[in-house]
Length: 299
Length: 266
Image (cartoon, rainbow over all chains, first blue to last red; front, side):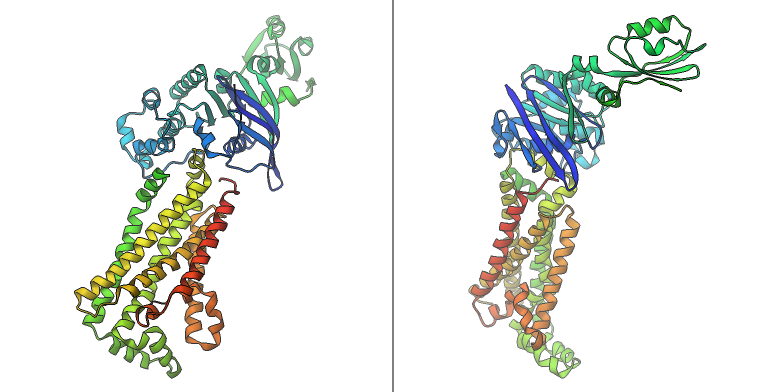
């Protein structure tokens, strides 16, 4: 079942095109990554899904129904990118306050979430204004998930969480998906999307660059590699299969590699390598995969 | 919506209770002042110091002949009473939308299965209830003060009319402030702009009453439709005032709802 369907969504803020003709769908049981740099339009998309912003054109359907009725949001859990909570409420009062908006959906997942995210009763007894940023983020996650929504919309959910909590959240999301809920997960960090998402949409300057399965994305992804050779850079290196671009400065080479890396590794093995850096791909590397022409530079 | 109302009570209870106690206490103390101090004598001395053409106007218009009842009525037209009523109205309206946007909480609230109409309705209901109780407590202050200090009691009807007029005046300020609030993102600006408008309205009314040439401005001041002296002393009808203030309130609330349902959050 399609939990979320977006068709040709466009939104402008004055002269700025926040979204241009954005279309995608998220299926039940799927974790869908929504990737883009800051200001790409991720938050605007989430707000449009919830009817918080009015769009110039396009349509959003939640569980097959057009948004408009407030009741349709009963099946949705949302964590905003910039979470602000009522500072004078205690953690427990806050969770109850938001749970009361859904009298038909008791917060049955709350104990499990509190346990998994390590929010204990002393934290819940304190006023929100005395809690750390990370703890507030955990409360925001519990608010979003405690009623076991059919669609989870999370805007940069790992902000402020330590690595252990990020892992705990990933496990929770995988569990949600396993039980048939859909998760739309916005982020500008490629590695976290790669670790849990089934499909990703990539957004840049309000336009969808691609909607791909993760394995397809991996194949298309151009990764950057830096090598320093003890002697000169092998002349055949730029022509090696898989290398789509090479920038050579003295004994150093920066290589952009796509697909199978073995031919390149064989080429490197034939020379004496002094230093090699093959970092985790970043968002820019993905954009490069879709936008940069294949070229070879030699300085 | 019930939990929204509960949340509003929890957030604003202290401020509203304080305003209620201050208004009730102020009206109570005015009775004490009238009973224990020769206020009319002092005021007569004070008015001697102002130019002759103002003396008659001050005596007649502001202190209503300087009778005990006139001074008690002035207690309801005193800037402290007016400011307390306006404060509750304006602060609640400014917080309702602009304040929630400024705090960043409106986005999370409206992502719940809660329509914007119901959200605004809860806020309006809460504010009108608070203003209603504020008006009643103010009147109770006057009543208890009169009883405690042994002053002649007002009839219930004019007291009821006064409470209704005070409520309608502040409900109108609430409506206007809410209209600004649904356009804004910062509650401070809404509060400042509405208080400035209220001050201007007060000055216009005072000018219009004291200076005949400025009388044509009177219909444009909301305070012209609030007349405690006429109600308490002459037992004048408040029908016209209530109609005007009610219309301002209803129109402002209607426009606020129209705009709020169409604006982007945040």
